[in-house]
Length: 116
Length: 112
Image 1: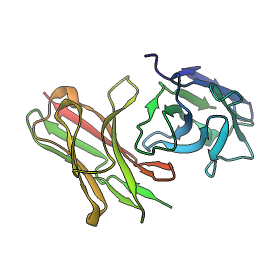
Image 2 (image 1 turned 60 degrees about the vertical axis):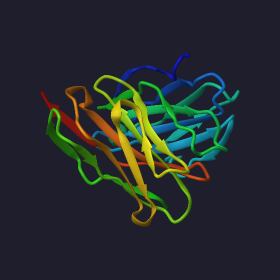
Image 3 (image 1 turned 45 degrees about the horizontal axis):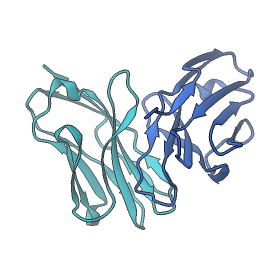
Protein backbone atom coordinates (compact mmCIF):
# COMPACT_ATOMS: atom_id res chain seq x y z
CA UNK A 1 0.00 0.00 0.00
CA UNK A 2 1.44 3.37 -1.00
CA UNK A 3 1.83 5.87 1.81
CA UNK A 4 1.01 9.55 2.02
CA UNK A 5 3.02 11.50 -0.53
CA UNK A 6 4.15 15.09 -0.07
CA UNK A 7 6.14 17.49 -2.18
CA UNK A 8 8.41 19.28 -2.13
CA UNK A 9 10.48 17.80 0.70
CA UNK A 10 12.39 21.02 1.30
CA UNK A 11 11.71 24.63 0.42
CA UNK A 12 13.65 27.80 1.17
CA UNK A 13 12.01 31.15 0.46
CA UNK A 14 12.37 34.74 1.52
CA UNK A 15 9.82 36.44 3.71
CA UNK A 16 6.84 37.90 1.86
CA UNK A 17 7.16 35.27 -0.89
CA UNK A 18 4.48 32.68 -1.46
CA UNK A 19 4.80 28.90 -1.29
CA UNK A 20 2.59 25.88 -1.93
CA UNK A 21 2.74 22.34 -0.65
CA UNK A 22 1.07 19.30 -2.17
CA UNK A 23 -0.26 16.15 -0.53
CA UNK A 24 -1.64 12.91 -1.94
CA UNK A 25 -3.26 10.78 0.79
CA UNK A 26 -3.57 7.03 0.95
CA UNK A 27 -6.15 5.79 -1.54
CA UNK A 28 -9.60 5.51 0.02
CA UNK A 29 -8.84 7.74 3.00
CA UNK A 30 -11.63 10.27 3.35
CA UNK A 31 -10.00 12.43 6.01
CA UNK A 32 -6.96 14.59 5.34
CA UNK A 33 -5.06 16.74 7.81
CA UNK A 34 -2.45 19.45 7.51
CA UNK A 35 -0.20 20.08 10.51
CA UNK A 36 2.49 22.60 11.28
CA UNK A 37 5.36 21.31 13.39
CA UNK A 38 7.74 23.92 14.74
CA UNK A 39 11.11 22.65 16.00
CA UNK A 40 10.77 21.27 19.52
CA UNK A 41 6.98 21.16 19.44
CA UNK A 42 4.34 18.64 18.52
CA UNK A 43 2.28 18.79 15.34
CA UNK A 44 -0.34 21.53 15.47
CA UNK A 45 -3.46 20.96 13.39
CA UNK A 46 -4.01 23.65 10.75
CA UNK A 47 -6.93 22.21 8.80
CA UNK A 48 -8.89 18.98 8.54
CA UNK A 49 -10.90 17.85 5.51
CA UNK A 50 -13.55 15.17 5.22
CA UNK A 51 -13.64 14.37 1.51
CA UNK A 52 -13.56 17.88 0.00
CA UNK A 53 -15.29 19.67 2.88
CA UNK A 54 -13.54 21.51 5.69
CA UNK A 55 -14.24 20.01 9.12
CA UNK A 56 -11.95 22.17 11.25
CA UNK A 57 -9.81 25.15 10.29
CA UNK A 58 -9.95 26.98 13.61
CA UNK A 59 -6.16 27.18 13.92
CA UNK A 60 -5.44 28.14 10.31
CA UNK A 61 -4.13 31.74 10.02
CA UNK A 62 -6.58 32.60 7.30
CA UNK A 63 -5.04 35.95 6.47
CA UNK A 64 -2.07 34.16 4.93
CA UNK A 65 -2.76 30.42 4.79
CA UNK A 66 -5.22 28.67 2.49
CA UNK A 67 -5.88 25.05 1.66
CA UNK A 68 -8.08 23.15 -0.71
CA UNK A 69 -9.01 19.60 -1.55
CA UNK A 70 -11.07 20.06 -4.66
CA UNK A 71 -11.84 16.49 -5.71
CA UNK A 72 -11.65 14.92 -2.28
CA UNK A 73 -8.25 13.38 -2.98
CA UNK A 74 -5.13 15.57 -3.37
CA UNK A 75 -4.72 18.72 -1.32
CA UNK A 76 -2.64 21.86 -1.50
CA UNK A 77 -1.65 24.20 1.32
CA UNK A 78 -0.53 27.71 0.42
CA UNK A 79 1.16 30.45 2.39
CA UNK A 80 1.02 33.98 1.00
CA UNK A 81 2.92 36.01 2.11
CA UNK A 82 5.30 33.97 4.25
CA UNK A 83 6.69 35.24 7.54
CA UNK A 84 9.83 34.20 9.40
CA UNK A 85 7.70 32.41 12.01
CA UNK A 86 6.27 30.11 9.34
CA UNK A 87 9.55 28.18 9.27
CA UNK A 88 8.48 24.68 10.24
CA UNK A 89 7.80 21.21 8.93
CA UNK A 90 4.39 20.91 7.30
CA UNK A 91 2.93 17.46 7.71
CA UNK A 92 0.09 15.92 5.80
CA UNK A 93 -1.78 12.95 7.25
CA UNK A 94 -4.78 10.90 6.25
CA UNK A 95 -7.14 8.51 7.96
CA UNK A 96 -9.88 6.21 6.80
CA UNK A 97 -12.86 8.11 8.17
CA UNK A 98 -13.57 11.07 10.42
CA UNK A 99 -16.67 9.32 11.68
CA UNK A 100 -14.54 6.79 13.52
CA UNK A 101 -12.24 8.86 15.67
CA UNK A 102 -10.33 5.77 16.75
CA UNK A 103 -8.78 5.51 13.29
CA UNK A 104 -5.12 6.30 13.38
CA UNK A 105 -3.53 8.84 11.10
CA UNK A 106 -0.93 7.95 8.48
CA UNK A 107 1.69 10.62 7.98
CA UNK A 108 3.70 11.74 5.02
CA UNK A 109 7.38 12.67 5.18
CA UNK A 110 6.65 16.38 5.58
CA UNK A 111 7.91 19.51 3.86
CA UNK A 112 10.59 21.44 5.69
CA UNK A 113 10.06 25.16 5.04
CA UNK A 114 12.72 27.72 5.82
CA UNK A 115 11.77 31.38 5.55
CA UNK A 116 14.73 33.78 5.39
CA UNK B 1 -10.22 23.24 24.25
CA UNK B 2 -8.36 20.00 24.79
CA UNK B 3 -4.64 19.89 25.50
CA UNK B 4 -2.00 17.20 25.87
CA UNK B 5 0.96 17.42 28.22
CA UNK B 6 4.06 15.28 27.98
CA UNK B 7 6.14 15.84 31.06
CA UNK B 8 9.54 14.67 29.90
CA UNK B 9 11.11 16.56 27.04
CA UNK B 10 14.23 14.43 26.79
CA UNK B 11 14.91 11.04 28.39
CA UNK B 12 18.26 9.27 28.29
CA UNK B 13 18.46 5.60 29.25
CA UNK B 14 20.91 2.75 28.97
CA UNK B 15 19.93 -0.42 27.10
CA UNK B 16 17.81 -2.81 29.16
CA UNK B 17 16.52 -0.02 31.42
CA UNK B 18 12.78 0.31 31.88
CA UNK B 19 10.89 3.17 30.27
CA UNK B 20 7.85 5.15 31.28
CA UNK B 21 6.82 8.28 29.41
CA UNK B 22 4.08 10.39 30.89
CA UNK B 23 1.09 11.78 29.02
CA UNK B 24 -1.82 13.71 30.50
CA UNK B 25 -4.68 15.29 28.66
CA UNK B 26 -7.41 17.74 29.48
CA UNK B 27 -10.82 17.10 27.96
CA UNK B 28 -14.10 16.38 29.67
CA UNK B 29 -15.63 14.03 27.12
CA UNK B 30 -14.85 10.68 25.55
CA UNK B 31 -11.44 10.43 23.95
CA UNK B 32 -9.39 8.07 21.88
CA UNK B 33 -5.70 8.01 22.76
CA UNK B 34 -2.65 7.34 20.66
CA UNK B 35 1.09 7.11 20.91
CA UNK B 36 3.02 7.83 17.74
CA UNK B 37 6.75 7.36 17.21
CA UNK B 38 9.16 9.02 14.83
CA UNK B 39 12.43 7.15 14.33
CA UNK B 40 15.35 9.18 12.97
CA UNK B 41 14.78 9.96 9.31
CA UNK B 42 11.36 8.31 9.21
CA UNK B 43 7.72 9.35 9.19
CA UNK B 44 5.52 9.55 12.26
CA UNK B 45 3.89 6.16 12.72
CA UNK B 46 1.43 4.60 15.13
CA UNK B 47 2.84 2.77 18.14
CA UNK B 48 -0.45 1.91 19.85
CA UNK B 49 -3.95 3.24 20.50
CA UNK B 50 -6.79 3.00 22.97
CA UNK B 51 -10.45 3.51 22.11
CA UNK B 52 -12.41 1.17 24.38
CA UNK B 53 -12.21 -1.97 26.48
CA UNK B 54 -9.11 -3.07 28.37
CA UNK B 55 -7.30 0.08 29.51
CA UNK B 56 -3.97 -1.68 29.13
CA UNK B 57 -3.09 -1.73 25.46
CA UNK B 58 -0.17 -3.36 23.76
CA UNK B 59 1.56 -2.03 20.70
CA UNK B 60 4.43 -2.85 18.44
CA UNK B 61 7.98 -3.62 19.58
CA UNK B 62 6.98 -4.52 23.15
CA UNK B 63 5.46 -1.16 24.07
CA UNK B 64 2.32 -0.87 26.17
CA UNK B 65 0.26 1.96 27.60
CA UNK B 66 -2.31 2.22 30.34
CA UNK B 67 -5.32 4.51 30.21
CA UNK B 68 -6.26 5.77 33.68
CA UNK B 69 -9.46 7.74 33.17
CA UNK B 70 -9.53 9.22 36.69
CA UNK B 71 -6.07 10.68 36.17
CA UNK B 72 -6.58 11.70 32.53
CA UNK B 73 -3.37 9.83 31.78
CA UNK B 74 -2.08 7.49 29.11
CA UNK B 75 1.49 6.64 30.03
CA UNK B 76 3.73 4.64 27.72
CA UNK B 77 5.90 1.83 29.09
CA UNK B 78 8.47 -0.69 27.98
CA UNK B 79 10.19 -3.06 30.41
CA UNK B 80 13.55 -3.14 28.63
CA UNK B 81 14.58 -0.60 26.00
CA UNK B 82 16.91 -1.23 23.11
CA UNK B 83 19.20 1.12 21.23
CA UNK B 84 16.76 0.92 18.30
CA UNK B 85 14.06 2.56 20.45
CA UNK B 86 15.89 5.86 20.14
CA UNK B 87 13.20 8.12 18.67
CA UNK B 88 10.74 10.88 19.38
CA UNK B 89 7.47 9.83 20.97
CA UNK B 90 4.21 11.77 20.70
CA UNK B 91 1.02 11.32 22.66
CA UNK B 92 -2.18 12.35 20.86
CA UNK B 93 -5.85 12.67 21.76
CA UNK B 94 -8.85 12.46 19.42
CA UNK B 95 -12.23 13.62 20.61
CA UNK B 96 -15.38 11.95 19.36
CA UNK B 97 -15.81 14.91 17.03
CA UNK B 98 -12.55 13.88 15.43
CA UNK B 99 -10.47 16.81 16.71
CA UNK B 100 -6.87 15.74 17.10
CA UNK B 101 -4.33 17.26 19.52
CA UNK B 102 -0.70 16.24 19.95
CA UNK B 103 1.69 16.72 22.82
CA UNK B 104 5.08 18.34 22.28
CA UNK B 105 6.87 15.00 22.24
CA UNK B 106 9.56 13.25 24.25
CA UNK B 107 12.94 12.52 22.73
CA UNK B 108 14.26 9.18 23.93
CA UNK B 109 17.97 8.44 23.60
CA UNK B 110 19.08 4.91 24.44
CA UNK B 111 22.79 4.47 25.04
CA UNK B 112 24.26 1.13 23.88
